[in-house]
Length: 148
Image (cartoon, rainbow, N blue to C red; front, top):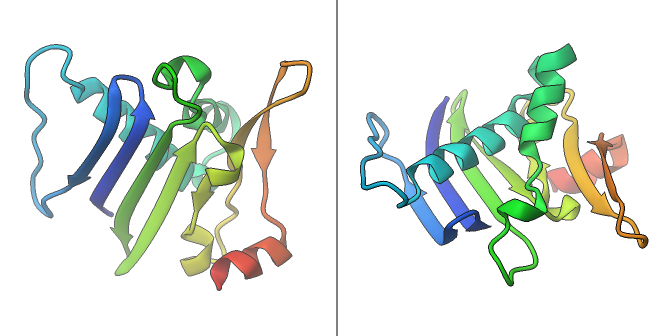
């Protein structure tokens, strides 16, 4: 698996960033507070969604919790944060998106690898402002629509 591109929008201290990764070696260097840790956290969240189908138990629970972008990680005065990751896997290009908006959390792993059981974490806000966190498993009909 090789990471090709990472897009970050309104996540922690980063308003907008696009990184096209070198196919061999990438190094993050810079002064304190410029966003190195934020980039690594964004990668962690996006990669967690991409590999949810491989794990169970506590590890799965930890990945699901990590994949959700919570309100305190969204930039002030912004409605949502998004992280998009593009990687190559078994000669296919796979995209994964993590968001504070449940409708934008996606992974096209099951398009290329239908045997994968992809479960995506989501976070929703009820009318009484309580938070609902859960797992969304796409139905066969949804998978068919997303594959087109």
